[in-house]
Image (cartoon, rainbow, N blue to C red; front, top):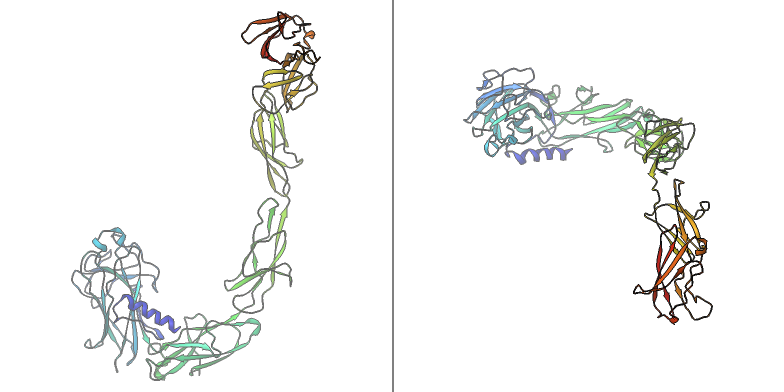
Length: 620
């Protein structure tokens, strides 16, 4: 606690004149507190400035809770950081430095140290850039005079308080000591700043209170406030010890007080020592001690100081946590969190049983279960080892969601297909707006159906429907006993030479010569295309050496056809041999002379079919 007061003193003196400073000890209740509530204007003996009911000009003032209404260069509101957060004295400083406020404060005690404090604010809004270089800063001098206005008891300057982009209050303080026989003082405030754009200020919460030795309360075993007592341990007893410094007072007299709200205090009869023994405690209460140099000064609030309130807190056994509701989800959804509400000073632990059981999570009002079940939340007081309260059951139900797999379908040209949600007796919502298990479509595209069961769990099944590509026969190639059916574009097709037996390969082996029909269809069973063709077994080479193997160029299977004619040419286009197809044979000679070993060309004409042309090799 002592560190806190020293820190406040450092903060005050770091940005203000070193003459200013807060009381570093314990303070009494305010003797005087001017928060400007209920005041419309100041009396003529308080200020020489002119009162206006609007934002003031130079040398004017007003009292209001509103700011910047008719002045767009001022902040538009007061921040809620003062004690009263209401009206304030708003002053537009005169061009010439001088006093703008004077007030007599009575009911002081003689030979007593006091703290005067006030909140100040530069009301010019630096963000408007209306005044050059941020405007002139405000600068206020505080003076405390004796009641005769002849003895200066204390003074100090705030130093320059520059403008800011956002409204900011700052509290300043000055300590002084009253003289023997003195019961009142005169407070004076002066404008030290240079007149001009920006030197405008607001003042709020002018407070006078006694300043005494710093007094701190701890328990006898040195426990700080709040001191917790578990309800199951009541009625209880505690011993409080007040420790005071000896910087301001030469002697110390004490009066213990009790409060239920840390604001309204009642003396505890007979408790005038620095130690207080409290017994029979069954409810929470605050305790503090007033300290004075003379016992007579303890009877009022003006001639003494007081410690901070020390809270003896009876920790009521928590009630069962309030459930935020059981949760229900679907198996295809994220598992929701369970949660409960408890008091701010309570923490929650989660268990898997109404009593005992395993600890699943601690110090959290939220719990993320891994599976369905009933879970139990239990509240206990934070930072205390008191008996926890009863547990609250919170249930998680996970309903099964429909299971469906996406499908890919193919649509034949000019036809329709049926899309099936696949799970009967549920609710269906199709992307087409239909609500039946099956729908019929006539165009390719992406479709989906939302399938919902009786537990209101849903899943979405997607259908990718592609238009089927019809095959187009580009060529049918015969290579000896092999037939290849070539298409203009690749796809998922199957092939046949008899219209009954289909295969995925476009190549047929060991095909005898003859007239055939090639059939091609999409594997989805769409329209079948076909083309009749002549299959001839034409040698790729001949070796006329009379060994009985490939000695002649002859076309097998040509006898299956009607009228046919064959011609053979050398590489220069010279006709070497010709004749009707049936029985045609060439032995590799011309005019009974062997022809050279090289490539030769053939042309086969069959009535009703396109001519077949190609080449073969003669090998020697």
